[in-house]
Length: 236
Length: 105
Image (cartoon, rainbow over all chains, first blue to last red; front, side, top):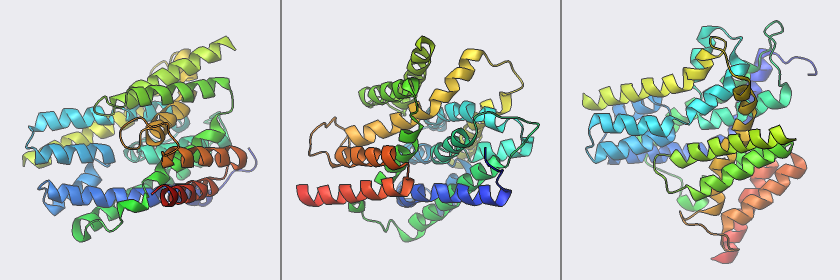
């Protein structure tokens, strides 16, 4: 690695890396705010949910179930299953966070969303794969910058949705920026055959299993992709 | 009351899921296969999120030229591959999407 970057540099480039995702994240947060009110949640509860749960898909599905007057345990189990994919992110980030103090681990775990994970893990992989606790670096500040940028945007956009309504027309297709950002992150990371195999098989299974409820298709696709990647890796 | 209880329970469970392996790493023995598997999490997960967005924009599989998101996404992938530039990739992808929407509709 060429020259270690300071805390400030890492933090700011974490925010910068997250910016493209925020373009699509903001309208998503506003729509959540509108839906939560429509589902009968008081404004305070709708906003608190963004702080307490801080997971878009789980919040969408929970508010729908609240609106349908589903029992609490049903809502709980549903939301937890939707969020199970975060265990994969936790495992994937774990080696890079192993040298940090417990407080950092708690904080970065709270901020570990799809959007923050995507930019953080690619940053770790691109800069330096190996972790040496004897020679610490400040890359966790990058993860913090990305996580906080999304967190602040999520809370603000939720509040805007609750108090002002959704202001961005769907015809602008801003949600597509999330897929585009993920494309920009993943394509350069496909450096060898096992990585390509993992990506292609995961993509195929994700499409084939898209009708499975609660994002289970996403988990299934990821596990198949990881398995295929390992298998191709062991043959080469 | 029930609303708040449910919300807090979901929040705690979500945190526990996100914290799980970050907490356990170093405390338990991680099998070598699992360590090797971890490097395939990003390509697998990210592609699993992207693929349905491109291939089934209306919740139904669509491999035609009329699928604007697929064409725009493939163009963006080409830009990402050639330039590794995130902003350029997004710009080209969004421009292509708007152009195709204007052309097709």
